[in-house]
Length: 100
Image 1 (cartoon, helix red, strand yellow):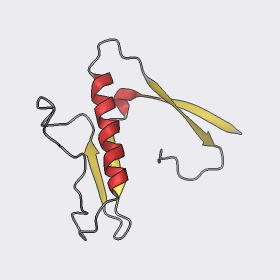
Image 2 (image 1 turned 90 degrees about the vertical axis):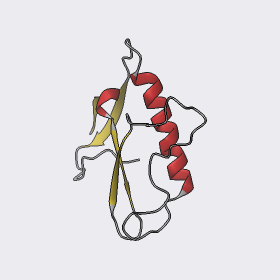
Image 3 (image 1 turned 135 degrees about the vertical axis):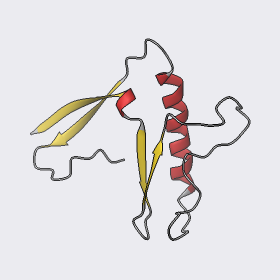
């Protein structure tokens, strides 16, 4: 059986990237962008390298998270933003986290 539950956009404020080598978890706040007022300033969501073992994070993951953050900031700033995500979950899953 497949269950569904909803997650409001404002509840998806944080994203975690896990280093493929050392498994360090880097959690970022999607609502924070110190250079948002200066659109020509690049402000990466995550560092280019793992802060523990210095292995480079995949550039596609970094760019994807930047796109997610940009979309998040565009939507979350609207007064009438009623956006939800629906997540499918199998009953037999042990891990209940939402993973990309």
